[in-house]
Each structure stands twice: as C-alpha cells, then as structure tokens.
Image (cartoon, rainbow, N blue to C red; front, top):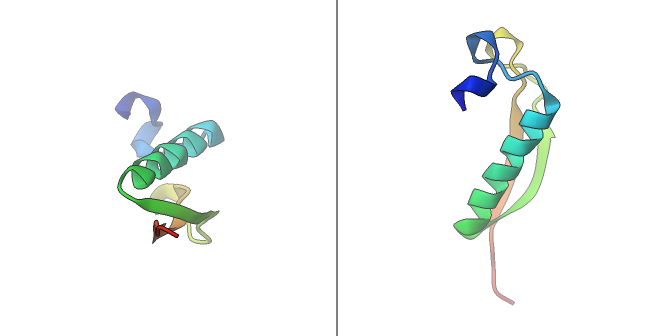
Length: 62
C-alpha cells in the first residue's frame, strides 16, 4: 500500500518485493495462470526502482 513505499514511490526492502510478487502470483493462479518464472529486470525503473519480469502460462488440464 501507499504507506509501505519510500519517498517517490520506491520500494527498497526485498521482503516487500517478495510479498508483492507472491500476491501477484496468487492472483494469477485465481484466474487460471501458472507462474513459469520471475526474474529481476536487468533495467532499473525510474529513480532506480527495482523492476521484475514474470512469465505466466494458462493452466491446462491433463
């Protein structure tokens, strides 16, 4: 939330990064997607903000 980010909207704590990635993965699972992988983006966002790249796939029934 808004109260969890630093000045300028930058999140610096790795625990918060991990929590948000997990929340997004949970949401994705709820809409039928499976997280194939998440990596740190090699490109920093504005003001040095850490970005992530994720790949999702549709869940298929076997």
